[in-house]
Amino acid sequence: MFFATERSVAKTPYRIVTQLTNNERERFDELLGELITLSGAAQRDAASGPAPTESPVGGIWRFRPAQDVTIVCSELPESYLATMPYTDPEAPDYVALYRYADLDALMELFAHVRMANPTNNVRFRTPKEMQTDDLTTHLVLLGGVDWNQITKELLRRRELPVRQLGRLRETEPGGFEVDDGGKTRRISPVLRSIEGREVLDEDVGHFYRAPNPYNEKRTVTICNGSYQRGTYGAVRALTDAKFRDRNDEYLRARFVGRSTFSVVCRVLVVNHTVITPDWTKPETVLHEWPLHDQEPDPAR
Image (cartoon, rainbow, N blue to C red; front, side, top):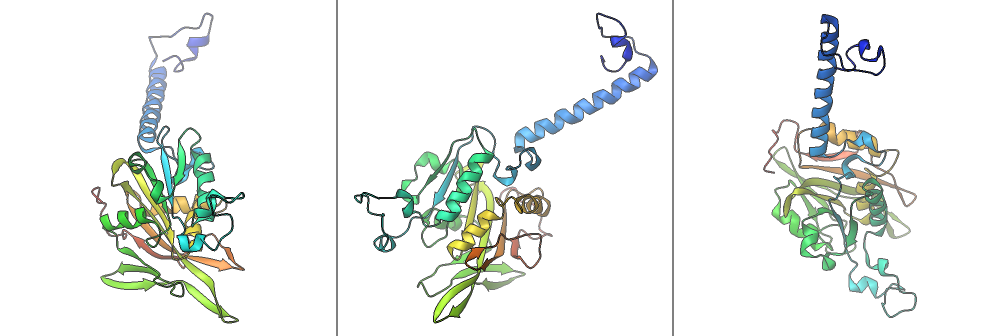
């Protein structure tokens, strides 16, 4: 009412004019409509979390304030640790982080989630270190069914048309098995032989987001790959400053209205370096779920 008419500030002290002309009443109605629209948008944002445009490091990794986040990273088997220096706790140069399998992905994601959620408690654990309270936070699982028991247990409880194939031997590339149009197909990494040695040319990454089955008010996110570079690629898709906004927008547009979705993608490796996958390129996305013609199912 104050801003609906210039008469409010025509003289001092300023005042609220209660008797408005027809033109001033129209202006009053316009302002009131804008306020109601803004108020409704603010309430929706508060309920669903901030929009990605509110922070340069927000997007899908932004959670509501005061909601804890736990990153669960696979731990290397003892057989691996025995061959690595500085992994013996009694060694003078012991490095605790050397126990983690997906260390590149862990450091990248932990820094990004902390930056996107400066007031939240963000921590990382190995599966063996998990406590009951950790399971009911926002869960982020790094690594697959071979070494991360939390990932293996959670996927066992979910209806998901994507299954990771374990690597029974180091020489087997594994991959993912997906249900596609009533058929099952296998998506595997690409390796090439150089001087009698297998080198990774192309890995497979998997990104999955759903409500946390242990606490429906929180989320669970899986970043996984056939090899560690696939896991790192799945993480970088939404942390790399050059790609995260477009990939985040792709998820929001492609899976609008859905709380559960999955993307299996190609992760290129050039000169031993992971190239961040661009999900807006059709040749990068190898499988996505739910399909376009499937209705949203809140129960899933």
